[in-house]
Image 1 (cartoon, one colour):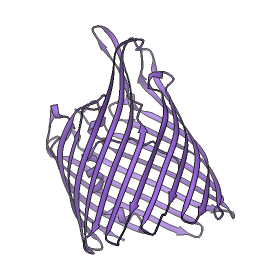
Image 2 (cartoon, rainbow, N blue to C red):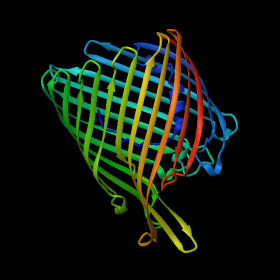
Image 3 (cartoon, one colour):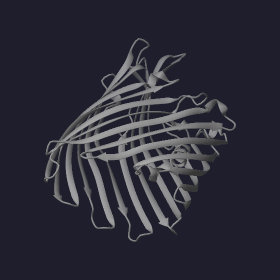
Image 4 (tube, helix red, strand yellow):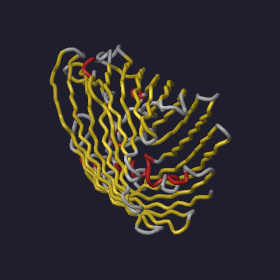
Length: 409
């Protein structure tokens, strides 16, 4: 699989909406054929993620989802599609229709090759905290495709190579539209049937053709990212599983060298199931989000802000299967943002510089109930808060989400 840059965001409402919309399809996605109808209601005390413009609202999400996951001989086909209607009770300017479609074909070729093709498209409303303009509906549309070829399916060693393409367009903030092209190649070694170690080299070139930098005549920005990753998965025991990725990453911004990054990125996760009813999980992510930047005019002349961010996030989850039909879950997430910002006149003369460390915390509790195999019910509540930083305003609030789903398979 190709690498995706991980961007940790504090969008508590969006996370709950995704959970609510997919409540019936999380398990359904592994079924050979399914059709799910789900409905969720979310009450959020700080919709815009801004303590200076605090708005409460109730969001209704109606989703229809379906999918196919079928193997035919040496081929496997996965297709999924969903459509949703997102309606806001008070802030109707944010009402929107979302969708997501994806398809994947994996096929073994000859005695030792496997080819995987993947494509997808989606449309949704981004997290409010990630939007500078929060007064209008700024729909995000994504398209992506990838290919992965692996050689060495049954031995200790295997090699793979591939490429991916993605395009992101915004309805309002067209300056953030971007296209990314990636290539990768790697080698994997299996010391045992319970573990593997891999080394992969990634190269990603991102183009933002509408971004305006330094002066009013300089339009467009390129981002060049190279990463050498060491990754592993280890089934320690029948109850414990470890996975991790550590990368040496170089991220270059030719038009704005102030946002260059050279350092370590990575992720790790641990899942522990000591008994049949309880599961515990820890995860950690360290990565960059250095695409921020912008220009604006003032009486003193044109000012340009060059920003960069490094994120460290830790999440802990506990799940308890209380009965055959009732499941309880708890989650805690903490993220720390190391952010630098420089304000320049005409893109050259430094006016001011600022280093800030922001943080995000969220605690959630939930319960799900499955009275029938085809019916799912559940509710979650969350408390979240974030400090002000270069990329975000300070906010805090609470949200409660309840959902119901019906699945035919």
